[in-house]
Each structure stands twice: as C-alpha cells, then as structure tokens.
Length: 416
Image (cartoon, rainbow, N blue to C red):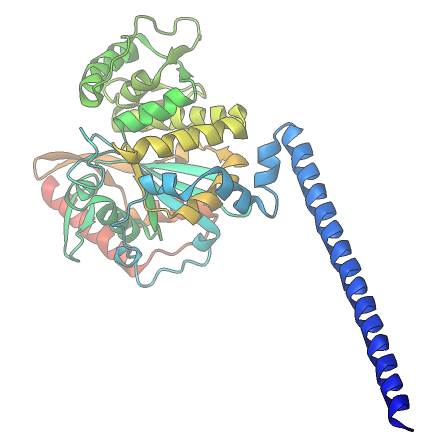
C-alpha cells in the first residue's frame, strides 16, 4: 500500500471515529435527558402527594407519623427555637440508679419527671421548692401514658449531688440540688431509672393553659374561696393579672378557668377535692388530684385541637423562651422531635387509686416537721412497678429494703 492509500485509510478511520464520538455524545445526551425527565417526574409526584396530603384532614398528623415524619417535624420546628428550653448544664453522667436494678422492662417506657416549681423568676434549676412532682411514663409501643403524683412531703433518703445523703421531705431535694438531686433521690428510693425531666413555673403553666383555651372544672364554694386566695399570690409572682372567681358549681355545671386561675386552683390543699369520677381527697393528696385533673384536661384539649394548632403552640412557646425562661428540660432536640409523634397519638390512662404515691401512707411529725410516711416502702414500691410496668412479681433492690428499714426505725423513734 502506497503512501496515498495509507493517507486515505487514515482519513477514513478519523472520520469513522468522529462519527462514533458524535453518536456516543448523542446517546449520552439522551440518557441525561431521560434522567432529568425522570427526576422531574419523581419530584412532581412527591410535590403532588404533599399537596394532596396537606389538603387532607389531619394532614400534618399523617405526615408526622409517616416513616419520614421526623424530617418533616424538623422542617416545622427549628432546632434554634427548641434550644431555648434545653438545659445545657444537665449531664447524663450525673444521673444515678440502684446498682442491682434490672431495667429490662422499664426500658420499654419513656420515663421522665415533671416538676412544677414556685420560682419567682426564671430560676428553674434549684433554690426553689418543687410544688408538684409527677412521674410520667409512656409506653413506647402503645403510646399509653400514665401519671403518678409523688407526694412532696414524703419522708425519704435524700441523695445529695456529692454522693452524701440525709433523711428529709422529698421536695427538699429540689431546693438543695435541683432536678438531678431529685431524680437520683426518686430513683434510689423507688427503684426507678428516670433519666430526664421538665420543669415549669407558675407563669409557664399559665401560658400553656391559656394557649389551649383554659380548662373547665367542677368547683365547690370552698375551692372558689381558696382559689382566690392563691390567685392573689400567683398574680404577684407572675406579674400578671386576671379576674377573681365569683361563681362555683351548684348543679354539676363546670366553671371555666383561665391560666392563672387554673394554676391557683392546682395549689389548693386546705379543702376536700371532689372529682368528676367520684374521687375524694384531702390535704396534699387533694392538691395532686387537682393537678392531674388539669393536666388530663389539657391532654384531652390538645388532642382535639389538632396537629396544626399544637405545632403553632409549640413553636410559640419555644420562641418565647429566648429571654425569660418559664420552663426547661433535659431532653435534647432530637428527643423532643421523637416524642412529639408519640404524644400526638397517645392515650391517657388514669387509675385514681394508683395515681398518687405512696399508696399506703401515714402522717407523722419528724424533726418538728409534718411529713408523709410510706407504710412499708418495699410493699409500696412493688405496687408502683406493677401499676406502671405490669411487673406482678417485682422484687425491690437491697437499697430500697435497707431504706425501708431505716425509715421504720426513724418513725419508731419519733413515736417513742
């Protein structure tokens, strides 16, 4: 083959190669175009589904409970706003439980303590007495919620944050060591594995009640009288005003209470409580009944308010905490986001006979203080675990048994 023929062959090969390259580019362009069209169709379908869902009744509730619900919630509730209520000083390593405690059953529940404190400002962590302490237990599988009020005057072993201990009223623990001291005290005396808490003061509770439109309760004439007495102090503490009550229930009709009025109502302990379910209780036991009554009504109102309203309320409450704190929690942003879907679909379970602890108790005077004493702490702890976790054969740890013995000795010495 001469030179001219070789040159002609090279030209033909280059031309063929160029054609192949152009063909390959056109094929690649067609593939890219198909991919783009496919992505556009996929995005359009997703947007269409979202639009359809958002037009449906309870749309946000449906989205929140979907597999990608957590990401949808993070879009609705910003981490920045939630950070306003998170206790950044709380350290999980400071929380203790009894060494022998078997938590296999309890780990199937979300357990946290709700504190109501009488703080006069935004000092929510300590140097204040906890006016109420409610153990909230949520079944992770069924979303069933149980509440147990822990009587604040119960005489127990108080576990200080430095590891030392003494015997005083339960609410003393919050005053000397804040939430951590109280959590550790309750875990030690009652064989629990509580790891988190939420604290709200008078103003914060009033805000929550008002955001949900207030509550309606049966109100005796005596309760009206004491509500007004507590209302005067509550208004001074919060720096807010409302009307004094002028009516009470006469024929079974309920009286509407706004936030401040309901807070004052929750503080009554000097007159008998008469529940809508026939429950009757005096003293601090009556006060805890009123507190649970208001909380259960708030839960019911929240469920009927709808997801949209609840999310608006949550956002408003989180944002309002940027300057003055009225509530605070140890829960992280992710834990709060995980908890919201559970609370939206939760069911509230209440057994009036099991909703105040200890179940079997007496009244004594120890160190010149009027206290509530558990009549056999071991038996009470067994009953608590059966109610909360269904453990019919629960055996308390040696720590609880030892505390029970010491409590009996102290009570006996005071009687002698």
